[in-house]
Image 1 (spheres, rainbow, N blue to C red):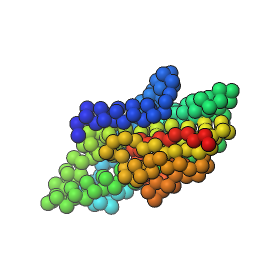
Image 2 (image 1 turned 30 degrees about the vertical axis):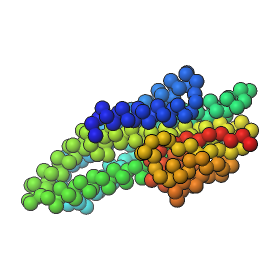
Image 3 (image 1 turned 120 degrees about the vertical axis):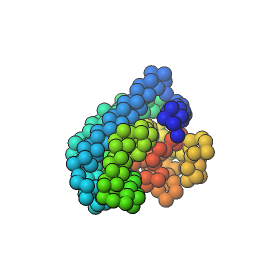
Image 4 (image 1 turned 90 degrees about the horizontal axis):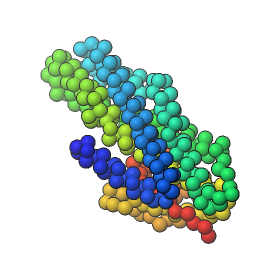
Length: 276
């Protein structure tokens, strides 16, 4: 899919999700800015990872470039680097945690304008912790994607030189961000996954702090691209402190980082408040 087409679809998805939150104009603009900031930070991290991969590949010998074990070690070192873990933590603190707070405070004041949002609550800390727990799965997904491509290149190469050249070409293409685990599409996917979690997690905490909310109702995103399990969950009502049953997962809210990846990645669903 062309980049422009992908961006149009992504914007339409984001607009639909933000519309569902029923924000004021100022809140909406601030949330959009946090969305964009989160996406930019994730893209920055992926670009740096792509460059680091290409640099590491360039240092390997011809024999090592044809050894899938050696290539796996390169990817393992790349994805366990403290540098990228620190950058990711900064992205969470600068974009996704504020988004959690904004969504929560907005819901709280809507229900009781005399309440004061507790920014130091344990829920926000737990949310950040759970978001960080997504990193290993994301890194494993990148590793698996690249290893499959490297394995195919090694199989197709007839000589050590050909195999090395094919592996280098795959690395170079991945580093450009045109396709693969370091692409803009992936940055948008990761960012939306975390933004959905932050907005819905914040809403839930705002409802809890209001002390008048009783339950929550799952609201599936419209369109044919919505997962079957999420469409089936549409309209499901549970108590505020109970999880939704979505597929094989139990989610406290759409995008809950504690859920299985297949139920939260790129999720666009939201929730409605139940007062009685």
